Length: 345
Image (cartoon, rainbow, N blue to C red; front, side):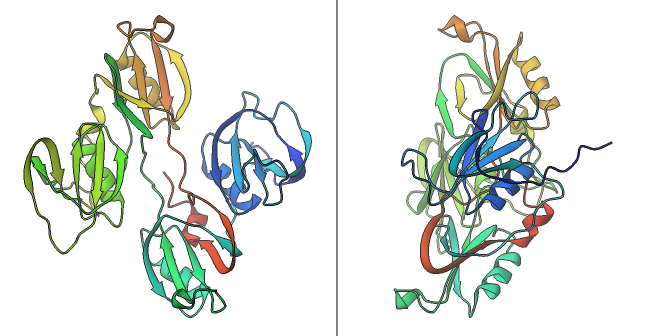
């Protein structure tokens, strides 16, 4: 028998500790939805906009888990709401006077927020939006609909060079074989709109393909530069730089996922670590864990013996607004397709 659905919410009650991830959400229902969609999340605590402790960020959603599946304590705390992961998923609401700042990739003018939401639903890259109504203080952007994007492919928050540390990236991302185009020892200067850590040119190409604004990219060392200038592409020779074009609506080349990146460290996003004998065992452990997207293995040549044989299993967070703020005369919301879970890994 399946476990019962724990749909009760607990206002002014904290489930302390056991945090493994935090993100911004406009209300506790969206926090619960994020917990429901995240395979690791068992329960959560959400901080509202009136919380009195300035050290705790407002509108923060703390995703939590434990070996028992239950919080170790339940402490009274005014200004928070706690609860458990749900199935089936909750549907999403509109959020008047809340802005989701940042993450814009396209804008248009619409007569109301429902038309803005429909524009988001019909755009495959849109996951949430903010619409400005006719009373907004800046007359020039009244009735403007801002479509917003959040990554649905695994990101590596920090990629650093470190001797003798092996990395293996694992994931399944797209659907029909692509014809990828790279320009080795070539830079495309200018038009950068985002730089991200990446392990290889192929990894950079996947990031470019996933972002709706990326026209082409350049990769150097451990940094992927996403560029947006659809009018022209000017290439110059530069040793050590690989540039290329995105491939969309097709199955990305997965060969780069099976490589071990010696001397490269993908820091942060750790779920847990286990002690194993080699990188291949670490790779198998990651592959067998449905929550694992990439990993780092530390061998016995690493300078600090306390870390030897550690296999760090890692996962990036679910798509979410980069921030939530109060702003009069705007309405924000989410693509309703998220209710079916199809925008999630």
